[in-house]
Image (cartoon, rainbow, N blue to C red; front, top):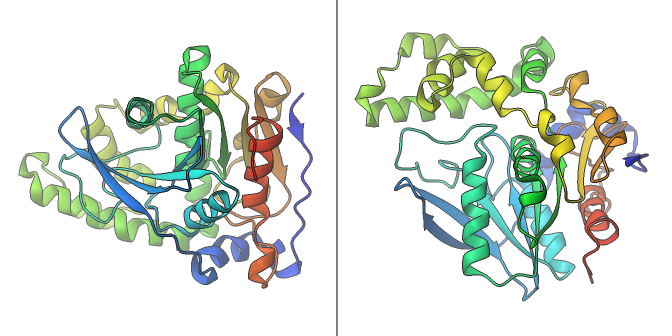
Length: 327
């Protein structure tokens, strides 16, 4: 029964979920030097892949969260740590998230695993890695879990496993949590960039017929889903999107060692996002609930050298459970 008990125990200020959530993006100084490769997609768009190579036989594919990028601090920290341990990394910037708007009206969403599949197939075709591991954060973690579950035992033998952190695996219930007052500041931050991107799309694609008044008044993810996600990606309704995009139904289909780490004090997540039962009934899906950590935080103290628990946890799972040699 692969349910891990966690050893994560931060100092007192970092035992507040909100404090831990905001500390990493605001105060951590992690930076990485990436080598960008732009690849053309099957639908005449582009995806930017940011590589950091040290000459390894193993490549770790890092997938960021909502409105993140290769510059997100959890991405740069993970890339630097894994490089130090002798592993190559590549950050998969989701469409429209690499600093340049993508070419099509459609960008990305929580369940758009066809892009993940395209990137993985590109890596398999153009590189000669013996091992590929997927590591996703928040929305990127949902993509990671859903992709591994969709592929099941038909996945390439080169794909050895995955790790996902702070993941809203049940989107419907997680959105109820996000609508609560405790998350108002986060929602305002997300909406600032998301609304601007939708407006830019409406300007470039007049046939989109965006109701700008409704966009300006939008305060919930469901509002944006009605205006953009549903019509652009062809869902019947937000509820249809939630059901089809959530990774939770796919967890028991995962056939490679895969770890999900969710903090109990993550204010983005509902109780449905802690899949103890699925882990207990799976040979390959592992779950670890930490008492603290916030959302994509997992900071320990004010000392930068102490704030590597998440990176070491990713490393340890790759070594011990996926069983790839690491320096």
